[in-house]
Length: 228
Image (cartoon, rainbow, N blue to C red; front, top):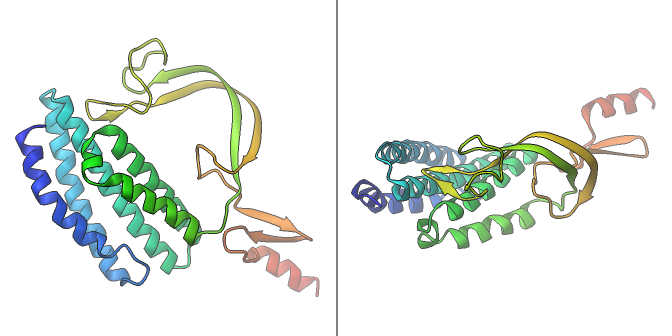
């Protein structure tokens, strides 16, 4: 990695640990928001470093910056999760947590610096929070046949180029962009690829509830009043 990235790493640890102080339910919401603001400034610095590395065709430094960017995003999303829980919005909190988990995985895939910064331990923490803070969810998983897809790095038909999904190339993660597919089925599963795809509401004995909170949907409450 280049000297600019090395210098950034020397100042990276302190704000990350400082903001980590507020990644708890009991911490004041105003401190958590301040931490988000501080991390957002830090993120802009690392994005600038990534852009410079890409300009100089320094792939190792660009991938390192990408990893650091995702570490910052993971912490921002965790802090947003705690704030959403305090604001009685567990559905939004869930989405923030799942995004934090995704950021942590990407950080580990992008560059070995994430291992040096103990992101494996942080990833374990995020999955533990999922189990402790939220009720078990019911997820959906589509089963489909991919007919056409493109590589996000070069735009070629995926499989006809040298790029591999989940690997970083010059500061960018390779993804498979599906352009044409045939849907066969949708199944309920316990461990999906996408944890955003889940049951939001359910109806039992004529009553519709929010699956996360168990609260009766507002319109349903009005209908129940009319029937009494």
